[in-house]
Length: 296
Ligand code: NAI
Image (tube, rainbow, N blue to C red):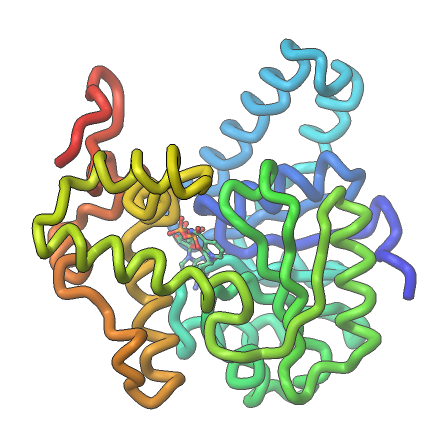
């Protein structure tokens, strides 16, 4: 199955950490990207940030000046969902909530053409469940990128029970055309990576609660001796505690309360406090201008 052609219109809904990364990669690969977000100023900020990344890539000799200008010109901000009616592919990267995602896809079904593929970047929600209320659930597939999108090659292409195999193949080929290494997977709770990663976070959080060591020490041990690129606390700070906590809740609920996946009260409190990690300036570490990377 062939990839969507270069120059095809890709709508990215949600321009937070993931949406911005997906837009950056798709535009750099030659696709026209329309970005939408309900938060005022979010799209403009995302496009400005992507422009800065392209400039840095040019300075480092990893992208030509012409390619950067062309990629930047392929990024468009849209103010209403109606404006994505001509998209060949919509990638949803909004809040990790089944009802909100279902509402968005119901609205999208009313504006896009019959051939448009609907993809969700959900980390953990059943793709089958997101698709179920659609008039054409066979066109919905998971296109699960990893954070940070421009650096992480893996994309899980997730088929729900109703997903048309041809849709999954087209998304697989398109992810390849975007320079990614996709893998097919079925819609099981947490899919592949987020399933096997749950104990990494959960045991780290338990060790911290038991005061075995502080977050920085536990991270250093996992990095230096465990061979991981990041320890559990710096990785949760990067992902966002709001996102990470809701993924754990979703996997826990999907396995009917299996205690192996019990969410952490400590992380729940971080979410309650608004300590989401890098994106809010504070998580297990402090971020932002002038803030030394010190354990919170
Ligand atoms: P984020 O909080 O950085 O961005 C979400 C964006 O969606 C925000 O800008 C928000 O204003 C917007 N939004 C919320 N509801 C909307 C709606 N109804 N219509 C349009 N825009 C809306 O979140 P992030 O981290 O980018 O995550 C987005 C999705 O990607 C979630 O489903 C998450 O589980 C998934 N994901 C997150 C990863 C991560 O490491 N953060 C990794 C892989 C997937």
